[in-house]
Length: 374
Image (tube, rainbow, N blue to C red; front, side, top):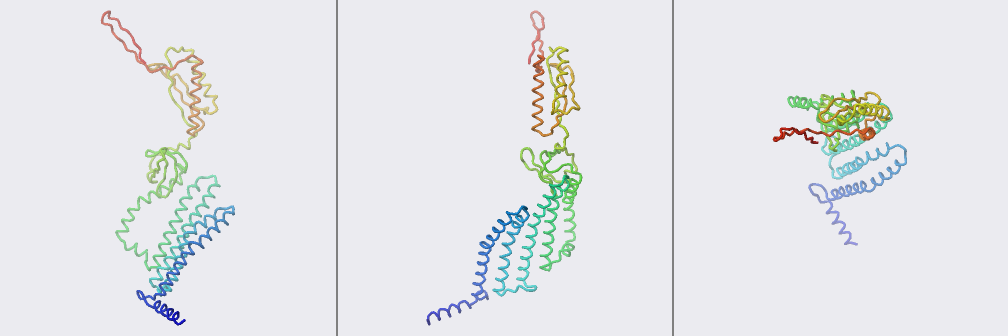
């Protein structure tokens, strides 16, 4: 018994020794607190989040599901911050008033709080998206990204301001004291402001929306995102092109998605052996076919004998499909071409191929012979 008592007293004596002016038992206690916090963070919080996810999955709305996902990472950090508070207390590090330890703990608490708010801003944007989809106008759909990013920017600015005040920094005085640096920053921000006002112009004028097929002198493709600074366009080669908004508002934009009808025009060349009677029948049958076609717009149908070409008679055809969708448009165009082929077959008219006449002079008899080449 006496030996055990001596061992215990020796152990207590060792724990009372100091390392870096801190008692050994306090360092061990601080380590145990951190280990316990990590265990709680790993096991208990994961179990709690898993339980909350199962509960929220049973509800009709997705708001609570996204709220749990938003709170999860900041919640894990909060446990570590609380553990650090107790570690500082055990290690006799002052965490009150203007002490360095106090600033550290309060800064971490503030950062965790604003990180949670920042992630929750995405949920607010999700709610706005749901409301925007229920309306007929596209204006609110374009406003959603601006609102989402605007809220996040405000949260970041307020968070930085609060943390700066915690460390007794006056951002207003700091920016005022920059002098020429502030002027240089303002000049550098001109392009950013131009892009932002360009985004507002796009939002108000609505020359295009997300999902539209547009063509500009610089890019052609599908609009994927309209942001504060730029618009992202996915080209048909699947490359993503980012165009500054200030550039878009200064250039001509063709919005193919807003076509009311889509044009088809071409020249049809037929052989010179075609008689006037067959030519007239071809024109009449082609006009009737286009006028009665369910996918051809009845207005602006042009089918005319245009001119005498180099290798045959040339007909000019110009009309519009009702659909503007690319695949459907080409299907209609294919059907029209097949129907024209059927009319040509019925009338016994042949397509003229490009040809040239070559005249050869015979030196013996002085005659001239013609050779046709196609």
